Amino acid sequence: MENNEITFEYLNNLYIDQHKSASEISKLISCSPNRINYWLKKYKISKRTISEAVYIKHNPDGDPFEFISPKNLEEAKLFGLGIGLYWGEGNRANKNTVRLGNSDAALLNKFIEFLIKFFNINKKDLKFHLHTFSDINIDEALMYWTKKLKVEKKQFYKPFVTKSGSLGTYKKKSKYGVLTVYYGNIKLKNKLISLLPL
Image 1 (cartoon, helix red, strand yellow):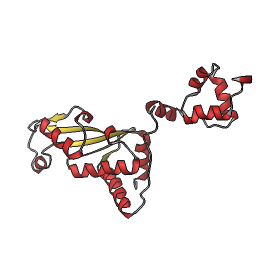
Image 2 (cartoon, rainbow, N blue to C red; image 1 turned 90 degrees about the vertical axis):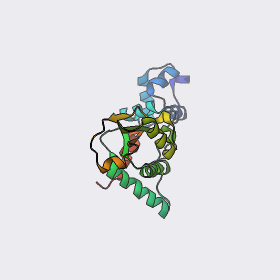
Image 3 (cartoon, rainbow, N blue to C red; image 1 turned 120 degrees about the horizontal axis):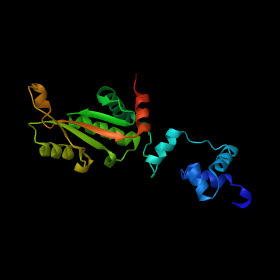
Image 4 (cartoon, helix red, strand yellow; image 1 turned 30 degrees about the horizontal axis):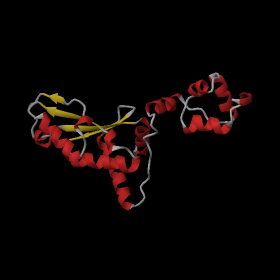
């Protein structure tokens, strides 16, 4: 650039608006990454943390996460239900993925509605893992879940099959197996954890 000076507007657009790294910007304008870091510091443009940079790298089309607060009583009811479901039924062991498993399609639909309404997720980005038993017809079970949740078969991982045994009343409740819904987003996971009354 002229006189080796980078304007605030130019740098801010590349680094903040376009989410380019210092290294990418340096290649774009043929200078060293250290020079880009110098101008970032000079203009007091906050540098991204390593985790933020990794997050952007894995979401090149923009941040898929957005938290939207409930605006009325009906939304507040759904919000409270969703938080309660995640608190009681959710698997919080994985750091990067929101997971919730159940054999009740209505319950899973409510949780999905909660994620869409308050976190602006795209339903097509959800993944599902079906846990069935050896005496259950897998194709029939998959058809049941895709129809009930209005999702596509390609969103499902390979089913996990357990050998059937003496399951008592649980067997009746799990005619189509247990389904776990997955959504991979570390910011959403952290936000949900922060909302739990722990």
